[in-house]
Length: 186
Image (cartoon, rainbow, N blue to C red; front, side, top):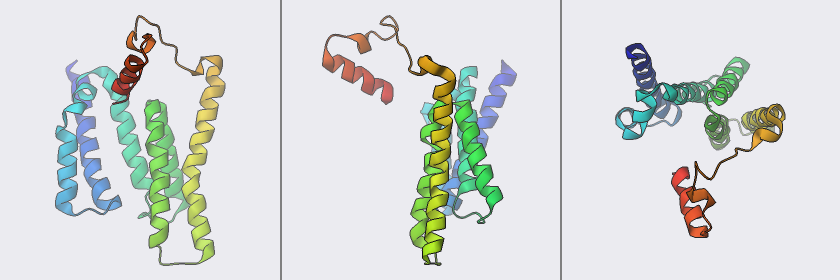
């Protein structure tokens, strides 16, 4: 149990350091702002469950791969096919660790690329078209991965909940169902 906990703490420390790097290099924040963001990430109580239990390792690994994907795919990197492919592979691996990474890793890479289009010095239409296509690659990959997941799982693709495990979700009162849904989404 001590080794498992040590690995989780190590992964959380690496993730906290990567958050600092992402804020500084990708989001171009000042040193102290990036450090403060990393410190807040490291100390935030929402991470206790992920670091304390073995089941949280999937979340820690997904976070690690997500941050590495953003660093590899970020517009500040050299416009090299190798970095693009590495970023896409890391984002896909994050998705394999935890499915909720799908809403973060690849779409975030696309958003960063789209936001960088206006800051490029080369204003040619070809350059903008190439950057737009590059920004759509992660979304296309995500669509392929999700279609593959649905094809592999067949009719079991939608989660099935029992009323015993989610009594609020099966309540006859609509407000109770809505509040239960918002509780789970928060």
